[in-house]
Image (cartoon, rainbow, N blue to C red; front, top):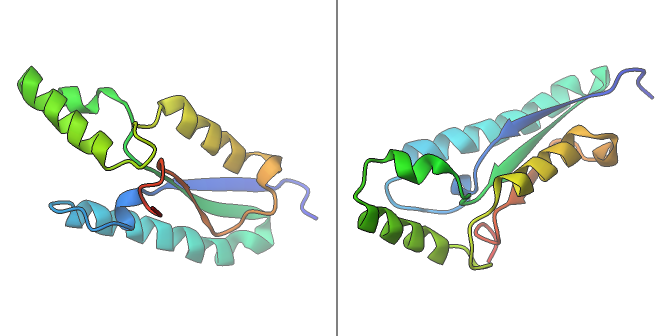
Length: 125
């Protein structure tokens, strides 16, 4: 249909779907981005541009180590975060990367204006 189809992926968060205390500004901003993905989809689809959201859940990154917490507190926080995930572990960055590649590729050519939760079940279970 389009000679040069494109894909835009906006990074949301599972936080837009859950009521995690002390995350209201972050959750609201991510919910806004996901709404923007839906709205932009309607505006850009006639140009062959698909817009979708990718919403990660808790993911193993060096971010916890940048909070300046003592090692024991950092470990306890990591354990509390893992306890939120029904699958029992945090996601791996490569798992998010694979989801992004899917959304960017022709494999998802019929996926428009939606959100892909890659969250270990946090947003739905």
